[in-house]
Image (cartoon, rainbow, N blue to C red; front, side, top):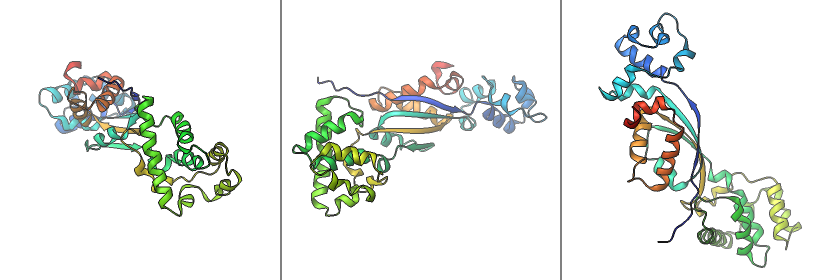
Length: 272
């Protein structure tokens, strides 16, 4: 079977809210502050030490509610935020199915100017596609890293851009910032010089409005995602599974690796 090389995502834990807010919420429901093993929670209604509350490592009540009574709404008060670097638009589509999360994703619309600049410059080359391929390959734009596959992927993008350029009489004003339009004349016949001039000039930040449809699910994206712990449990249950698509499984595995044990104890039986 033919093996294709992929880039695996890198995940960093950006912030954690702590367990304290979730225990305070549970104790509020039952008015049982005096039963907490955490002194800062026991005394919370008389003397509120939010720093100590947010630093507690264990909560017998939360564990009991999660595993004995299956009262998971309480742990919605604890949240984790992750920085994900190097996953795909295909994974992004899968992520959108998890309703209870906050997600901010690297914008295609505002971040694909180098690809458009490479294509625009390639039109000044005798071998337009060869220049485009050579220029786009080092940009690390895709999750699949196999060069033979990437040639097909980049050829597809090139053909879509060529189609659009040939059908759009306003291509240059759509693709190039107004202040950079003079470079088209001053660098005429020199693709490399034009590419560098466009890269160093003012970028047309919303260039993707007319071109974002050219990319595939293999397109590399970065994102910041925030889950409450109940939703994270659902995410891990579904995505850290042999039945899950391998790319999102890789991401779930990487997220689990950076999730502190005190949260995993509440949402994963292996860590109880």
